[in-house]
Image: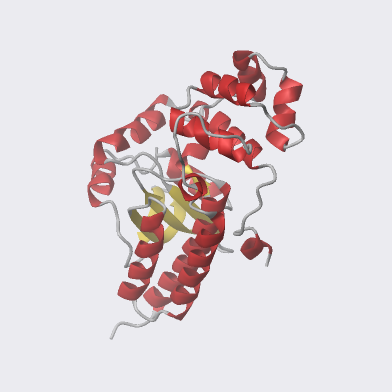
Length: 271
């Protein structure tokens, strides 16, 4: 029930969660960001944990240090309970896709997937939900390490980014791609933007950068470790994904339902 409860609004610490997400996406430590923004590391820690509430001036200083756009700064201001500066009016669902409504849609999708007996129907249910949060392409399958490298067996169903996958295969990126490695070792959902550039080699950073040529800027992955050492996973790609706590939780719920459903359907005998 804790996963379901977390789908619904809880604005305590919303500013801190957004700030941490921006800092990690930028690959900076607390100390480095504090120095760049001209604040103490202790105070920055309080802002990130919700022990301190920022002023509009503090939000502007942090946004400037992080080189955020006007829209991103407005989202930080709204998360802190302050008025936006760069828009006359911003809908709340533009910032968080409205956590309560998003939670309801995720639950509806998960229930629909649990009862689906068709790969096509399951794909359609998932596509409708994920399309609303900026995820255009997705697949599910099983990942396992083999002597020759990563063995990835894809389920039928889903909406793969065909050109991107063909590009990766042609360049033999499978055993180099940081996202594949991250999927193998993590046990909870993550956005590509959660991974700091400093954790990747130059080649791995180039692989992600090449996604822009295919209109892929971010994605969401849900790994599900299995007892036999393999990992069942949902992997997705999008041009614009709202990488926040509400989206992560809702996406995890629907992705888990889709992985389980397509895995079961793919195990049924043909006919």
